[in-house]
Amino acid sequence: MAEIVVVENKRAAGDLIAESIRALIESKPDAVLGLATGSTPLPVYASLARSFSERPLDVSKVRGFALDEYVGLPAGHPESYRMVIARDVIEPLGLSPANVHVPSGDVATLSTAGAEYERALVAAGGVDVQILGIGRTGHLGFNEPSSSFASLTRVKTLARKSRADNARFFDSPDAVPVHCITQGLGTILRARHLVLLAFGEGKAAALAAAVEGPISASQPGTAIQLHPHVTVVVDEAAASKM
Ligand code: GLP
Image (cartoon, rainbow, N blue to C red):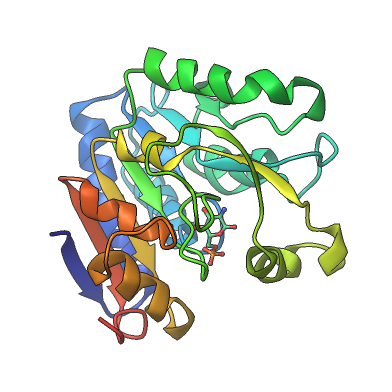
């Protein structure tokens, strides 16, 4: 059973997780962080940036691996996860860009990108702490319903609902890419500690299913129930259906 922490607000969640990540880096300066995108993990990155500016810490050896990327966006597109991770994580935390990896959504190298990412993860010794949000479809990373629990990094088609949810970041709903490359549920389950965050009523159903529902590929979030070390940090609204 996951450890569930209900906090007052996003800032409290960010502070709590940032403290544990800071402690991890203090004990392991080359810690490997699993980085999620979306709006959910932003308070964690903001709290970490505050912590590092108030009490400087050598993060030059910290490594990071993003969960996913859109396929086919032009290099430098502001909503590509490569750019999002640069803007929201690498710069504010002062990480070395060379140490932070994002799967490649470049169409030209797509057939090998998944296996290459898996090799890089293994070579890094695996992820110490994986930060996760959850989509309203129940997706982790971009593992939409029907993803195998054994899946590794690969190309997937985004669910209509996920494209609609992410349309807010693009000029029009049609501009949201149709495909993505995402770590698999099997990849995510190899991380040594999973930290799942969720805020707001819109996530309550997906969260309750992930934490308490029957384990099923139709609810990818339920994969967390197979992991021995999971911390779920949520606000009251997200916890309301558990
Ligand atoms: C995104 C990401 C996921 C994220 C989820 C929820 O598009 N690929 O990793 O957890 O969808 O997004 P948000 O945090 O913005 O609600």
